[in-house]
Image (cartoon, rainbow, N blue to C red; front, side):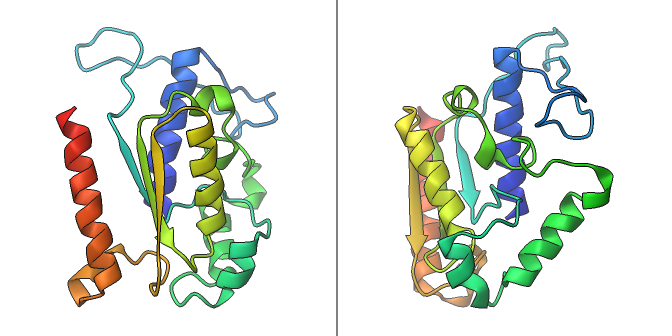
Length: 191
């Protein structure tokens, strides 16, 4: 969940850097004064950083707001990520008393602009069909595809949130997604 958030947020930051976007403390989408700064590449030369070749987002927390959606209502009984835990994690990740904006695209990539999302690498998103975060992945995937980014979403049935590791426990749905993800990533790295 949070790993998917961090991976997507990294792509948002790289894309913003590429287009010259800056966040400052007066920006309504800012993260408490966080500014985009130029960093150095491995060669030591200042310049544009390279976007990853591909990104896989597993049951990603793409929207850290606690707004209700259909999947967040239907998924309240998820054994791994019940609704109360979503709120607790969101508040621990971005404490409300610290002034963080949960709609900042660096906190919630779900809210990234089209200009930023157009620069995303090919993406594979997967979630459970009953995952409380499914709607966020569906909408994010639709936006990427509409903007011309090679993106796909797999919603596996009969598994809870963060099910990917259940392949080792013999869940066939998780095993199928693990195999697909390995093949997909292998193909992405060949090109």
